[in-house]
Length: 436
Image (cartoon, rainbow, N blue to C red; front, side, top):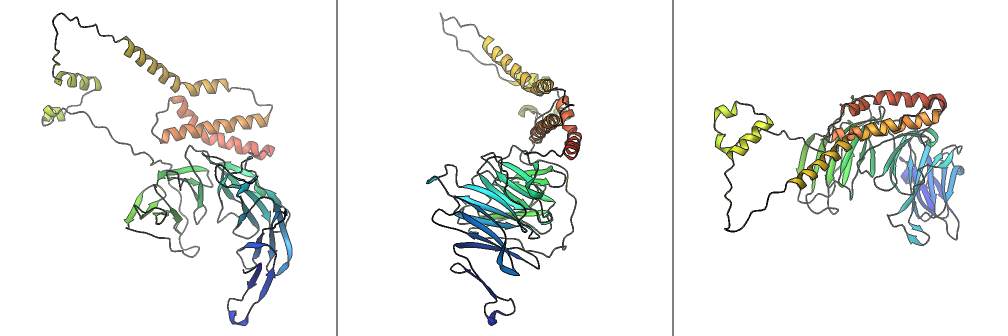
């Protein structure tokens, strides 16, 4: 591409000269689709108050426009084809809003175009103009995932004709989405100015597989086997602690190589079918390592075999510690009466703390009892109630993954997740209801 013109050459006949040529005024960016009969997408930046244009043209007839869309306020755009070349996503960056830059970074809009021009529409991002990342599935031509809205960002999976399918609910901060080579797993991560938390989800089952942290990550790549990932800290983004790490998606760190200065590292590609697809592992969370607390052993009795072989209860340990503490010598001043010790305030504080803990432990029961409504007559309300219950289950699972203890009612609620998802799917298929 040069000066509003595109020159096309034959791969085995470059010396023969230009094979095809296309000239479009205002052309700033183009992108080819994959396949034996590729299509060409063009981004045209107009001036003098005219809207920006994205066009799709087939290679066999570049003069004919098969599909196009227009929008205002865009200075650049990223064109993303799906694996078959039947659909195109346009990520338009709106750098200026009313002659003023956006406060929380560049605004963005997402548009969907079909190759035949029958379905061209903006993607429903729930009235948000903050788009962090979007990616197509490498195996499903209709599936793509978008990360949008202010932090903590929302992550939504879309299907055919931009229909919302599933929301990846989580308490982690995320701004990036990366599919594995087989499309069975997707990594939702928070890089850049975020901590580096990576979540791996099973796309078909819509379940969280693992979660762990790779701090100071500047680059991320999937290996062709869809089991291992590569993270790196490179220069000049970060001048210190340059290194690359190889992980299993379960969270196990397999290899770490440090460098004084690392500029770039990537994975070697492989042909499709070289690595077979393997089943995913059970759910686990490695963000916090659980340390085993050992019993207290006083230094006086550390070498005693009787003490080592004996098991003490908590109260016994407390009594043993108290018996080993030396007596505190109090200096007494003649003529001075020592004030009586007031332990009422600490008791009140401790009692208030215990009451607060009791209230915090009992909050799911109060919520579940107040939400009991007869919704048999209205499937919309029943579906809304089930989705709310599933969100509560996701929150409880997240607490459980972080080591929090759940009461029996909460454990029962978590175990009912599969039934809730089946009921949601049944209602959506029966009444053609989707999550907007």
